[in-house]
Length: 266
Length: 258
Image 1 (cartoon, rainbow over the protein chains, first blue to last red):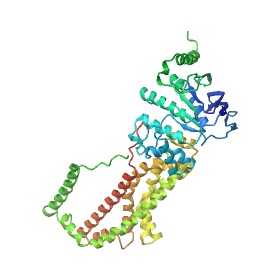
Image 2 (image 1 turned 180 degrees about the vertical axis):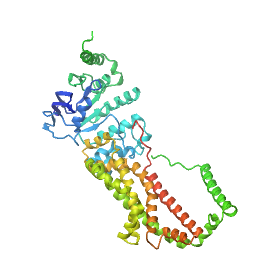
Image 3 (image 1 turned 90 degrees about the vertical axis):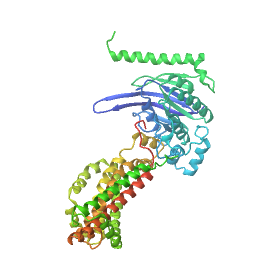
Image 4 (image 1 turned 135 degrees about the vertical axis):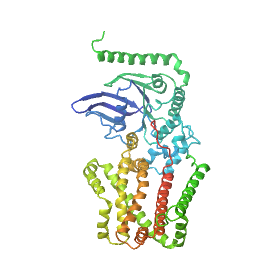
C-alpha cells in the first residue's frame, strides 16, 4: 500500500533557562495508507510529545520532517484528526453538535455537517442520543462522541491518544472491540497511543514499542492476527507470544533505565 | 435534552410572602403607634401616595431607567471589547490596566460634576455616568473569563485548523459568560446609582429629582415613594439580567474531571 505518513528524523528537546531536556530522540517511522499503528511505552516516554508534533501543536527540532502523501508538510494543523486523552466535549453543545465541531471549523455548513453525523450515529452507538448534552452521558458514551468528532473531521490520518485510558476495564474492552469493527469499515490511517500492551496488540496492525525518556523506538512488530478479531483472541497462542515479546522489550528497557538511574546500586 | 428547570417550592414562596407581609405590618404598627409620621410614614400612606401620583412616578422612573439601561449596554459593549483586547495582549493589559484602576479610584461624585459641565443637563450625561460606574468591573470579569479557557480545548480547535477568531467565537466567549454575568448582575446596581446620582447634579426629570425635591420640602411620604420606585427598578433590572443568565447558562458548571 502507498505510504500515507512518514516521520523523518523527528526529535524534540525542550530547552529552558540553561537546561536541555531531550524528550524524543530523532527517529524515522513510515505508516502505509490504512494501517492501524499502535504505540506502547511507559508514561514519560514522549508519546504525547510525538502526537503534539504530528498534530501540529509543537514544532519538531530542526531537521525533523513530516511527510504526508509524499510531500513534506510545513504545518499539519487542520490536516490530521487529533483525539486527546480527555473527551473535551463542550458542555453547551448537544451530542450531535459536539460531533460536528471539526467539520464546522473546516467550513462545512451546520445542516450538511449534521446530516453527515446523523448517517453514522448508529455505528457509534449514539442513535437516539443526538439531543443529549454531555453532562447526561457516561464516560464511555462521551468517548464515543469524541471519537465520532474525530472520525467526522475530514482527514485521512487519525491520532488517538489513549482514548480509553480513563475508562473501567469492562467498558474499555467493549469499546476496543467496537473500535476495531468501525476501523474495519472505514479504512483510515490511525496512530494510537496506549500503555496497555493487550490493547496495542488487539487493535494494531503493527505495534511500536518506545523506551522511557528520552524516547526512541525500541521494537517494531507486525501483528499477524486475522481480522475481525474477537475479544477471546487475547488467549490465543499467537497473541500471548506477541505479548511476551513486547513485555520483554519493555522490561529490558525499564531494567536498564532503573540501573542507570540508581548509579552504583548492587 | 437540557436539564429540567427547577420550580420554586410552594413552601419557599409562602415564607417569602410571609416575610414581606410581616415587614409591612411591622412598619405600619411602628409608624402608627411608635414613631412620628415625619420619620416613618405608614406603608399604607406611602402606598396611597404612590397610586395617586403613579403617572408622575412612572414617567420619572422611565427616564432614569432608560439612562441606566443605555449606560449599562454601553458598559457591556465597551467592557467586553476591552476585555478581549486585554486578554489578547499581555503587553496592553500590563501597560494600560493601571490607568483604568486609577480612573476607578476617583470618587464618582467628583467626576459627575465635570461630566454635567461637559455633556449638559440632558440624559447623555447620566448615561455617561452610569457607563463609567459599570464598565470596569465588566472589563475585569471579561478578561478573567476569556483567560479561563482550557488550553487543551484551544489545542483541539487548532488541530482542526481553527484560527484565533474561530477559537474566540466557538469557545472563549462561551467560557467567558459565567464570569461575565457575575459583574453584569452587580453592574445593574451601579448603572442605576450612576443615573440617579447624575440627576442630582442637574436635571429636571427622573427619580433622583423626585427624591431631591421631596428632601427640600421635607415631604417624607414623597421621599419614600422615590425610594420604593428605586427599589422596584433595581430589583426589576437585576431580575431581568438574572433571567437572561438562566436562559444562556443552563448547562451545569464543569467539574474537576471535566
